Image 1 (cartoon, rainbow over the protein chains, first blue to last red):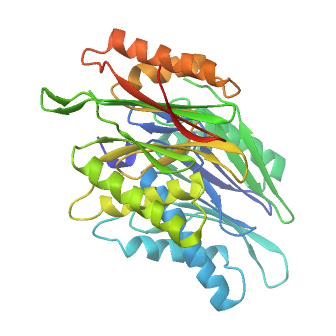
Image 2 (image 1 turned 45 degrees about the horizontal axis):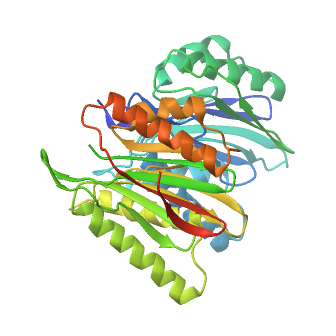
Length: 208
Length: 194
């Protein structure tokens, strides 16, 4: 069995109208044995950027610490907050530094970047475990249920969804996909990032 | 085979670990204490590769003590668990990684909350209300899903622990027959007889 499926877990991010959403399941397992039903995989980077880290759980903790350090260093040196695209490049280069002994994590990044006119623009990206970036205009997926999430998202997602509609779309996508995956599930957590606030909700899901 | 359980309750954490030190099919020792007292309000049970377990547990014990001597205050359970996790995660990608699984339980004297962390040899860490390591976990976890109560008194917690031990004794072929049980609460650490 692959090391990427050892702990289980999935993350998805979607673009809406002047908003983005990122969601994950809450399971931590050891192969088929469930250990925790409240294991966070998504973390805030700044007020407007969130990163999801599905994959091997030990590397999730390590990378979370590494990203926190590097983003803090960036903020101090540049005297400003990091932009989502810059953060995506930082994630990519951090992973590629370990090209021949990688961290077994496929990060998903969701955030709002500032436009010159003072507005916001939704940004999502995902990378593989060695940092190959994938910028998407619609949605990105990662984790043990990624193939299933792709299928449901392809059917449910549409452009320019308002925050509440985007929340419903990403929630239904994730929940229906992880119910078909033995290694993901046990509850979900959804963040919808809008211009002036972040809506965070935990979802009750099937516990089998 | 090696088994350890831990559960939290109202203001306490209980950790239990079996007392056998086995090599291959032979029991070399039947009264080994595999729960270390890391600080006045912190416990750690360890299991895994013999040799690695004791070496790593003593390394952790001495470093936590060193921190307390240098800074006058002991690390909180979450800080101690994070440091231990990082030590294991760094060890994992070294030439000779430690194969040690841990349950770290403590009482946070700043927030007056009990905390329990499940850590495996890869450096996977998660905070849990109850947990187990070893073959006993396959029986104990489902039992704890049914009977664990985060608001239970110490007596109720210990009786839940007894259910786990009895279930493992009944269903596991290679079950241990003796356990050390330690409790940590606002008054500190103490060993209890079941």
